[in-house]
Length: 387
Image 1 (cartoon, one colour):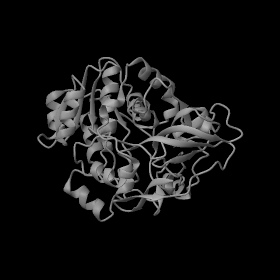
Image 2 (cartoon, rainbow, N blue to C red):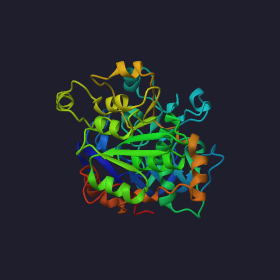
Image 3 (cartoon, helix red, strand yellow):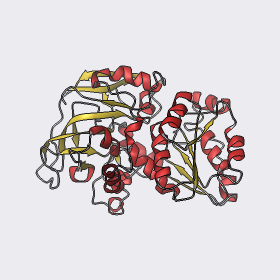
Image 4 (cartoon, helix red, strand yellow):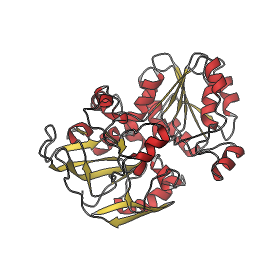
């Protein structure tokens, strides 16, 4: 089969790889019909995340048709059209029983992650050997462990484009709302106008936020947001100091500040230098802006991916302002039924973020395009040849 594989920093190649097979009685085998490049895939692409090995299959946002199932799979059958969850959960451990599927105790065998974080989190598709070393879904076929837990059946009345983002980023945008307790009348500020940030704007507006402010410096993304998301307010930090401008816009500060950027985007020269020489892995620049800008007693919600350590984290104002900070990988399965219902009813339509739909064979080109922010690239969905 064809697959997009990591062959080194900033190198993705489409190669022939063995077709996966059922190896456990709880597995399902998918013929992939659509697979997306996630912003967090760029952390792997650039070599910013540890644990990548040459030849690893990329991708954790994918869906397809079930080709085969293990003997103990009960709710999924051959021929079902399904979306896979990016985090892999067993469905029966204590974390899964509490619906914190992204912290599953069973599916990640990485000792390195336990040494770094104190515990192992859930395994992830196509996201390095720190998260279990699972082959990703940017391929003609993919094996899905614990299929009853990690696949959701989707109706034929909805297109791949409408439901694919249940695999990760629509759920992640919703998770940002849940962590931030976004409700009617709130003022919400969102850092990052990438796919998750744009979907977070849509979700915040849907939940009744009074004002939604989107912060970025990529002009085509801000312009796109203004066209597709009526009512959103824009803050271009290429033209304004974020903290000062936000204070002018919201003197008391937003009720909820959402980080949808991630760890390798340093803003200050000092942070960039420290990352370059390995004195920190994660700059605190953007998180500090959230802390300084948020109103007293407000909530800071972090769904951008962070890896390990950061310097000059502003713990003082976090404490003195009585802020609540919440963060975490998204337990997609927890939100699936609710969000699928909103898509079916037309209350949420995530398709507006899609900018490119090439064949999987164009993966090398599309990774570079997305990483370099060229050709108005916002969200890439690729279609395998086997589909």
